[in-house]
Image (cartoon, rainbow, N blue to C red; front, side, top):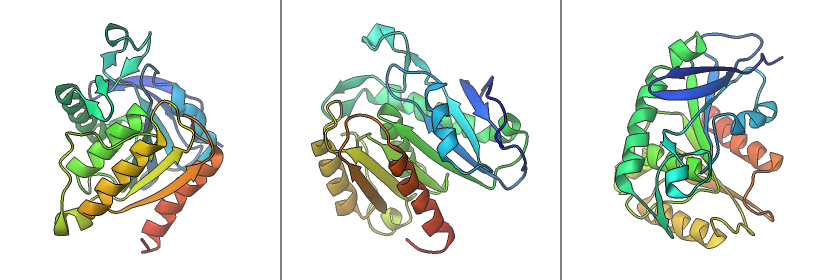
Length: 227
């Protein structure tokens, strides 16, 4: 049974945390990044869909959303339209995520056996950027309804083949990040040779339980030696 949600601050970011009722060194930690204008507690609701022996950590983005017109919540970067972001803002968030992931043993109270990084919308875009720019830093990345931003330099050749595996789930009726952006982003990953899997649903800009099942399937295949 999962423990209560607690809060803290590490690596420059506030966070919420739910720990498995039992476990310790070697357990998986899922680090989930919320979307634009949201907050650290938002994706804790996914914990019930994840294995009971996983820790679920949900950091809060560093930028206040209000100055950029995103309401009272927080943002990982400033969105510039279509598939463009303010590169400096995203770079700052990626650097803070480096510090946050390095601090995970202190956050969790144990050393995780693996880290799965994922996120919704802006959190998904940020997770893709992390996978591509820090290959092998985490076991896998989950992108729920994010996109490949225009300034992301994708690896090619052997470097692309060794990139962190990505799961990409998207809604075909997504009105916030249109499905056409999923199509074009996946085409860019395919052209570069970056490994990824997909699952699409007849939904809008949200996550359904079946999407989590598909994302977990990627982890199972990685651990069983599949692709």
